[in-house]
Image (cartoon, rainbow, N blue to C red; front, side, top):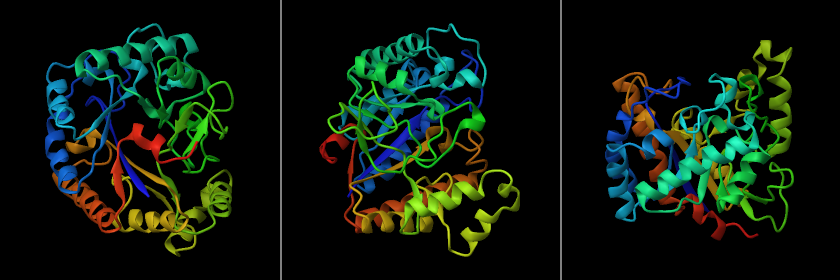
Length: 321
């Protein structure tokens, strides 16, 4: 098994869909994070948003890590602060997939060219901001030469937020064709999807997911039966992120994926979480210490289990086409 660590490396302004006024102070915390990664022989992929890629303060911080060969730089498109600005700002259009395909392409190209200019590398891995991805996004990526997408958050439905429904997409990496259903495997497809890992501690993912989806939709969601089954150890859905899950939960999920012979896991989180008060996951200094402790404990497990760290674009070498 290989481990990919993806960090959505973005501006401080969580939930603000304005194209102006972005700050990137959280990037100052990246070197301390990178020290943790270096201690555990982890090569992260920093998926960079436009305000970060265009920042004279943020770029040198990340470029030092890149120039040392210690990370990969990929693209992370937040449409609301990536030019050109032609759409109406708001929550719906914060999902890239809700924009016209031609506008999606020009925004992704703008980010792509800014990264290439300021980092001296041509990015080949991508994640849509807020997981807002569709076939038009994939077509744009294909035109720009991207090899790997990681815009799918496995087993998660974003329709309540004007986004896509990934509740039927399992955490398996798969090759796909931009001209077909981008949420389904197509042998011989030219691009690789590496979903951010969400799964179940139970062995039968399909059965567990069917039960989970049934219990979390109306009217049964009001009964909170999924939470009851979780506490009883009968239905444990776990996201592979220290923002939401304990080290114990992430380790349990990874052990299950090892038994199922998964070739890849994709741990994910957001750079604003590195500074208290910038994301909903870390509000205090105590929260920040707990977050770091969860991350370190999981990475220690991964090292002991001999799970090798690779960059997101390297996934094409780990998954047969």
